[in-house]
Amino acid sequence: MSNNNKTRSTLREVLKQPLDFLSSICYIWWLELKSTVKDEGVLIFFLLVPLAYPLLYSWIYNNEVVRDVPVAVVDLSHTASSREFIRDFDAAPDVKAAYYCNSLDEAKNLVGKQAVHGVLYFPSNFDESLNRGEQAHVGVYCDMSLMLTYKAIYQTAQAVALEMGADKVKTHSFSFTKRDEELTTEPMIVDAEPIFNTTGGYGNAILPGVLILILQQTLLLGIGLSAGTARENNRFQDLVPIGKHYDGILKIVFGKSFCYFMVYCVMAAYVTMAVPHFFSFTMLARPTDLFWLLIPYLLAVIFFGMTLSCLVRYRENVMLLVVFTSIPFLFLTGASWPQSSIPGIWQGFSWIIPSTFGVRGYLRIASMGGTINDILPEVRALWIQATIYFFTTCFVYRYQIISARKHAISHYQMIQDKIKKERQKKGQN
Image (cartoon, rainbow, N blue to C red; front, side):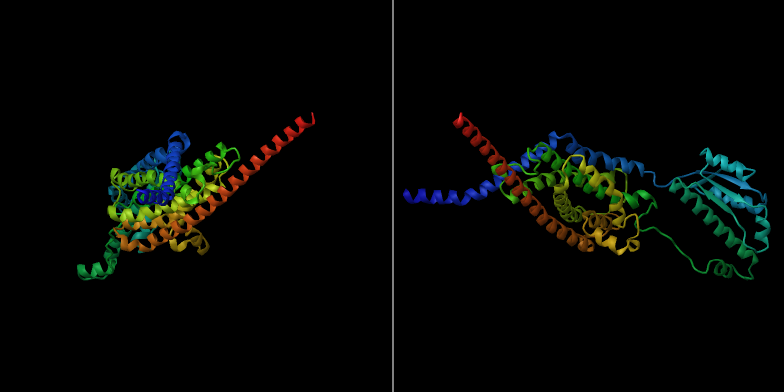
């Protein structure tokens, strides 16, 4: 019996430390989850914004291609050639010849009233220049306040001009057969077929990068807001309170990060898979490939946010640190600005931001139909970031634990000094 008791006591001693470690992690995880639910600000950034913000963005970009854009026509030529150009222009699905004006000033007034979004201008010598074999000019004036309307008007006018020019070349050529005419007017046939962005709209081009960036920015805001709340509720403005569960670095890091990771696994699945399905955006990624990309991405963002949380002294500070970076971070990914045109120093800076590799990897598998093998460089970069930021987080919380202990010890010594002084006064009296 004595041997069995010794064995049990030894087993308890061996299991005590791992069990205490796990219980502390679960305790910190539970406190962080409870504070997330109770804190309205954190709850908004962790739940409401990731749920609603992607829907708002997707709804804005849902109409990717505009149709029947109203255009004012100023025809000073009044010839068969100008009427042919206007007829072909109006037959295109993207534009509509809504008004016919006698002067540019009249057309400008319509643009100012937003009745039209562009002007098509034919000078009086249009037909004369065209029939002489000279270069004829057609003025195309577009309202640049909306890129979709500008694109529709300009591209339609350009397509009609090229087609009409080819027909004029045929009539002035010395070809004997139709084949000779084809070779003269179109020596090289270009068959333009969009591969990835089949609709040619901004939604399929921009939305995937924006969705991944939303995950990062809301997670950084929530973690920073939680850190600011912890400091404001702490007596000494410390990030880590004094307690038996907060006496280890790994306990704090694992407990907090597991809470954030658990919440954002659901948010990431919703944002990357459900939202594109709701609005019929291009989605070629397989769930397994998404899984292997999002796991290191979320870990890298979580540890990146926990590292930056040491800079947050008050709840309002996180807004100043994170919100204004959304647009620069999107440009640095290369989704809305060519990566080759980004200066080297900024490309180096982009390597420290998780969204850079997260957006690039997601675009390759969601919009381009790539597999996990095609995004291995991005996945490796995210794992490297997650590892580096994990150690920086441990360093930050080690410093916070030491700082909290120093403040607690100094406060305890101050109390002891006050007690001694009071006793000395009583003894003198």
